[in-house]
Amino acid sequence: MRRAAKRRPEAVPGRLRGESSCVKSPLPLREGTHTARRPLRARIVDRLFWGSEVLAAIKGTASGLAKRYATALFELARESEALDRVAEDLATVREALVSSPELQRLTRSPVVPRQELEGALLALAERLGVHRLVRNLLGLLAQRRRLFALPHIITAYGEMLAAHRGEVTAEVTAAMPLDDKQLARLRKALEKQAGRTVKLVAKVDPDLIGGLVVRIGSRMIDASLKTKLQHLELSMKGVR
Image (cartoon, rainbow, N blue to C red):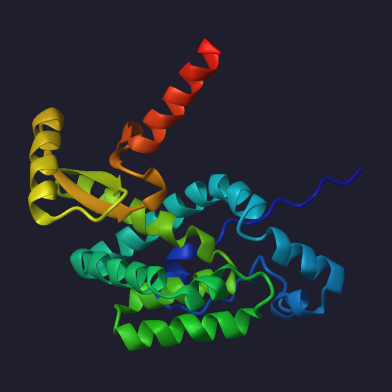
């Protein structure tokens, strides 16, 4: 009985540099057009479930991919003395994606041909004027249909940069945008607790209703009104 051949690891650093490789890609050459030829029923199922079950299942995969891509990007940015520039450009890309529902649909769709997806992302990179490493990252993720991992890659890169600077990154999610004074007070409190310089990454999630959630590495502080209401609901069920 023949054993299945092991899949070779992807040459991420070389592709991010923009180097052409003579090594065969782990993806079939015709895979870019394969999606469009799938049966109609399969494509309808993809459309129905994309964004719910599929996205939930993807999260576990994304964290592993993110670490590998972010590590390669960080090392190349350090070689190019562009650590800060790449971080700034990644933040710019994140803002562009968050503010454009059309781009979000495009990057999540399983039926858009790879060439069209890559072209759209490279056009975005050109418009934003990002560093070549960020541009190459977007093109590579589009080619391999791994744009779902981009937010995780950006977060992982930020954590690596913070560690490089002797900082710690805290991700703060609130129901409404926090003003500068609130962020400064929160940063001061976290720095006192952590004993290190804290870099805040602020996000907004209206579903929290009120309060906020703070993540520092694997540690989470959940002070959201949503969670408090859930706890209250559970306690009320016990009373009935």
